[in-house]
Image (cartoon, rainbow, N blue to C red; front, top):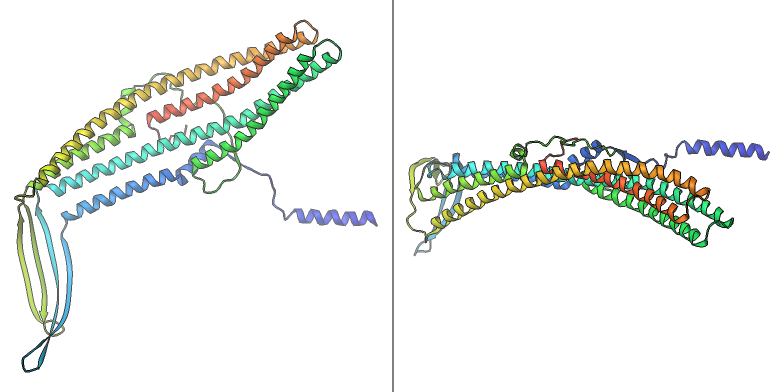
Length: 427
């Protein structure tokens, strides 16, 4: 009877479990997954895109003065006038019409202002590219940090195992009277240190996850991991033409666009000294009855010539010229800065790649020495002090190799940023 009840109970649990979602399944993201999410959700990128839209609307505002300006009017009024005899008369008035005006000449001020606005749009678009490049760097740095943190857990586990194995061997030798207590305490301390570093590595993973989620623009945090390797794709083994690279850098192109806009603003400021000529016309009806019956129209040519405004227009022109000279200097600064950054980033990348090779050879040598030294120590051929130095070298080599691999990926990210590559650069 008990067996039958147990079978029924197990069957019920099995049925219920089919309705319970699987727990513990965590998302694994590739580098391309992170790129796709950042393109859609990163708030810095969204903000920069809206700045482009603002500049486009600003250009439309400036250019609107070049088109005919029309307006419709409607009026209705009632007035009452009294007389000495005490009587009063009420007068009604109704009117409607349409008026139009067209700018004919203003010394090309409006045209140059519209062209300057076009350059400001280009500057905003290049600023968007710069933001995209910076976002890519932040994303890549966060991705590499999480990748390194995940790998560091494996390294820490390997180190903790090495330390535990060492402790077992030393404990046996100590119990046999072949090793002193100081060696045993040192081995125990090394195990404690390895476990501490393993716990820290696990905590670092969570921090790196949150940093990467922020770089992607995630609206809510969910635990996830990343999948990737430590292979550098853009090695730039052959030094490229740095002078050619700066010609497409968003920082340089943004500065050039601002310089062009400032030059056009000088021409627009000169237009302030020219007469402003516009034509106007209007047509409508007006009478005391509704609908109005009496036609009326008007047409005219308006000329406005500034004579004296307390030096306002000259000051505006001087300000525009100063802004242009500043923009010229800013363009030179941008070119020089990008060129230096390219040279530095390329050199750092080559150094980092070579460092990976050196650390890999060091790790291989440390692993081989560790195998030999462990066998020698087990038979008493070398002392504890000599053996533990070799073991410590192996632990250091494991950490240094991982650090060198991560540093190479970050150096690659710096190189990509120096070139001005955006999120569309998928390497």
